[in-house]
Image 1 (cartoon, helix red, strand yellow):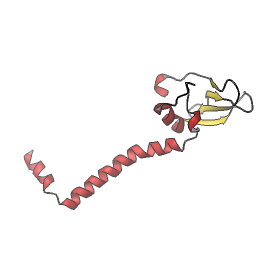
Image 2 (image 1 turned 90 degrees about the horizontal axis):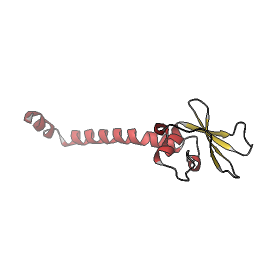
Image 3 (image 1 turned 120 degrees about the vertical axis):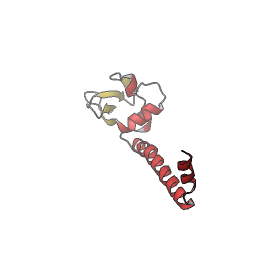
Image 4 (image 1 turned 180 degrees about the vertical axis):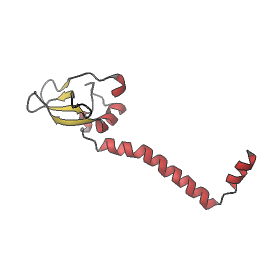
Amino acid sequence: MEREIRTIHRMPRRARLVLLALAGVSVATLLGLPTLLAAVGGVPWAARDFDCSGVVSVGEWYSGGLDYGWRHAIGGPPECMEVFSLKDGLAVVQRCPGEPRCRIVRRLPKNDR
């Protein structure tokens, strides 16, 4: 075991820096890519409140950008929009300019919020 540790310390400084840089880029890509995709996702940031609580949680923000879409309400008033699941096309929340501003169309399981 000691021999392996000494071998790592004997690596040239440039090789250690390259290895550290590759590890940093890998971690940044794994964390940054989903966040970037969620930020440019289909549902506007203000409409990602799926439980109509008035507060958008981190989970709602991520899933709103990755798993849901935004369209005109089907079978509702023409001025209303709805958040729908990209997986099955079913509406989750309906947003309207008038009252009620936010209406839950179907409840999401706890692990899907």
